[in-house]
Image (cartoon, rainbow, N blue to C red; front, side):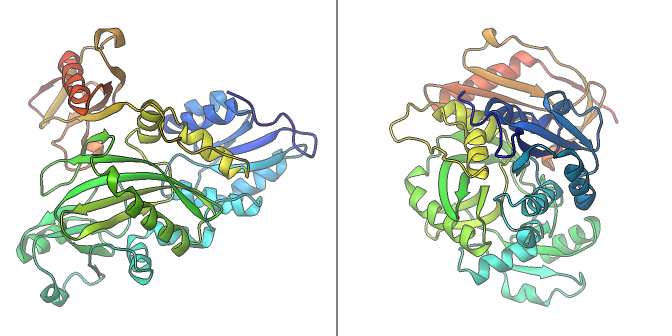
Amino acid sequence: MTKLWKKSSSGGPHFLVSIGAGINQMPLIKEAKALGFSVIGVDMNPAAPGFLHCDIRIIESIENFKEIFIKLKEFIVAGDITAVLSKSYGTAIKCAAYLAEQFNCTLLPFRRVDDFLQKERMKEVFSESGIPSPRFHIITDRKKLRFLEEFSFPLIVKPATGHAKKGVKLVNSRKELEDHLNVIDSGPVIIEEFIEGDEIIAAGLIHRGRYHLVEMTDKVLSPPPYFVDLMHLAPSRHFSRSREVREIGQKIADAFDIVTSPLIMEIKVHPEKGLSLIEAVPEFGGEFIPDFVIPKRTAYNFIAETIRAAAGKDFKLPQAGTKKKNIAVKYITGRNGIFTSFNPIKYEEIHGLLFYRIFKDVGSHINPPETNHDRIGVVITEGKSIREAVDACDFAIEKLSIKIRPGK
């Protein structure tokens, strides 16, 4: 890959700050190195694997924005910080936005980060900006449910903050709602109308306030009452609606004053009512979409081009007519029990196998999928068709021969 720069205007190297240095940050760190950056990694874990590829390590909790800023100023003498990014979510995004402002790097405004992280504020911005989204109500007092007269069951219940589908559930009656409110964490809760239809993920990039759609995938979820991601398939069967997706992405960019940032949107496709935005996050997203799905399907390096954009340099978007493949990401789930063994497989044994990873340690307890954290592992494959890619996933999972014995 062509490197962008060797030295900054001050005579030193150009630096990219990676907020986090865990395994999920490795693609960001490696792409930055390939582009010619010196990388500063920030992580509270001194053994974080990403540190092996960083030029400077700052061992600090990413929650301590100001302390990190002070340490960065101590390190940076003969160089310039050109970009601050994270491939994580939540607090990592907030830390990145804070530091980006301190060093005059382009990203989303720090003052707007909580509008994404706190889902009730995010929903309010959607409503105020005319962004199509399910009707919702925010509960602060769990005994006051008079608002239910304005809604029809079933309804979606979700915490006002959080991720990985923790606490998200479909309820079919007032009794189910009250029971669920009693067991999930305290704090504000969002009650949202349930919209029938397919769900898609739109991965995009905002630069200089303009939204660019990079990829759309179809999401396959576990059956109600929980909504755990089981598969992601590309290309999306709804790619013909990409113009509408771009319009929603641009409204997000405008409503949240985003200058430059990756953006992931979860969108419901109702057969009659059209598109409805469930959630938007200013991040690369998970589910291996930026790491494998996009580059393998389109030969477009989403992470590298986002780094270029964040650094204020020219970047490329996927070209029309680029040879594209069919990709399947399938997660492995199981029943209650103890994970006892699996059979490692060789890539050459499975036609179309691109990647696999087992998340759980042998001996750990396995739950049926109620949150994304309950998944045992993942398999990613390619094929001449979506069906062929999914069949390859199933064959690979069979070869892994995962064993779970009953027990606690």
